[in-house]
Length: 417
Image 1: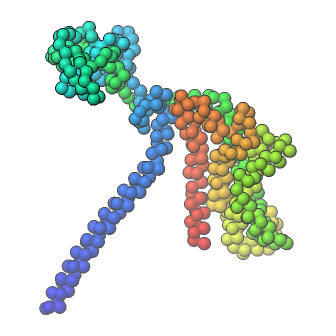
Image 2 (image 1 turned 180 degrees about the vertical axis):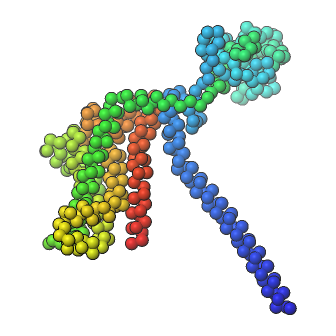
Image 3 (image 1 turned 45 degrees about the vertical axis):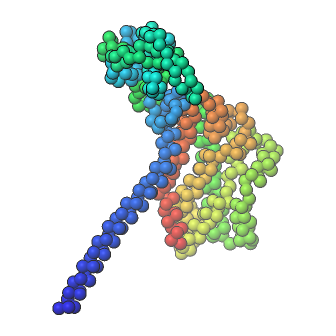
């Protein structure tokens, strides 16, 4: 009996502990997901803000504080004219009213005991009382005049702080109802509006349009050249036996350690001697070969079973056919990875085009140089700069999405090895 009771209590404690652990596990997962979601939102926010700004107007781009979504003032037709709408107090209520007149001489009035509560009203519609009041403004005592000012359908006595100018607003639904306010500080009625014409405007710039075409051409040639030479070199280092192969591979691999900035001057001198500078060829031919790509393909070729190659040799296949009918079809994950990295390098290349191609040479300019030039010329139109940057990002994103399957597969297979 005692043993049974002890077992029952133990089972209850175990069940309670399991339930508590389950609740703790759920809250732990919720916390992890919240942290990951916050980190993801922080990473995505700059791109979302860039996309929103690329569809704004120039004035909206400079607005402070900045807003993510583009907004335009709502316009309305009043007495045959198109005028903007503002939210202004009329008869004690906030209404959407049309701005029909600006620059009206007015005064800024406030109660003498609360100078922070201000009202702007035309001087022609107020009445001076002849009285004055002493108030302290920014540590100094000033004498202000007292006026009778209509506020919310009542006439109250207020002190005039200073002169200003106001606009006259009329309720579009009730033209007899009107109000006054400082236009600069009045809240405009706005709506979300995307200006996709910014993209066509950027593409209409000749230097930018030509730069995109040049960048696509250079990228295709560089990626194609690197894939071809890396496949050939990787196969030679992985499967062919020849004197000095391993030593040459170590030297070839060691070239990866050399910073590109060290090679800029000698490489540029070679291009000048060959008369290739200031042309599209100077952006292509020096990068047809890549030690990283050769290393990547060699390592992947080494993982392919030799039995497949030996069976093809028995069937009478030559090296060339073995490479392109057996090794290449099995190497799509590695090829896609190499193509992705090569594409991103060629598409985003900036230092070498800046050195090898003159700034004024629009026929050989590429996208990175065009964006830099646009950033200087379009300082007063940031929406065009953001539109150009967005266009520059679209193609790499599509390439990565297309190659993501193979890229992840190659990373996974490398981890398993």
